[in-house]
Image 1 (cartoon, helix red, strand yellow):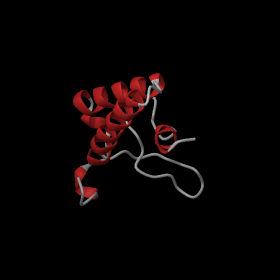
Image 2 (cartoon, one colour):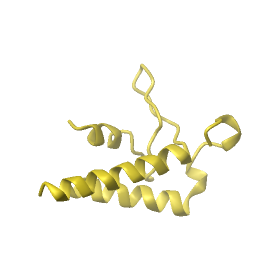
Image 3 (cartoon, one colour):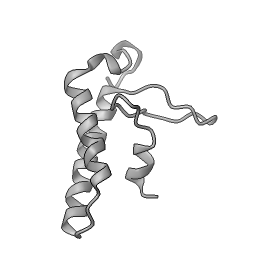
Length: 86
């Protein structure tokens, strides 16, 4: 699986993407800044996929869900006071 596919395995049903997976396999916290960076990265990956004529419709759906969550559901992300990069 590609790096993008690995990242999308960490996407929650509500659209946000966990910033890490624990050794036990749990992924339960999403950071706004991390998700914004992931959103940009997936859009770049989609542009590259389009350039080499390798459509990735599942990435398009996932990035749309992520973008919606970033724009409309700030409560989906852990609080800023816990993380220095937020």
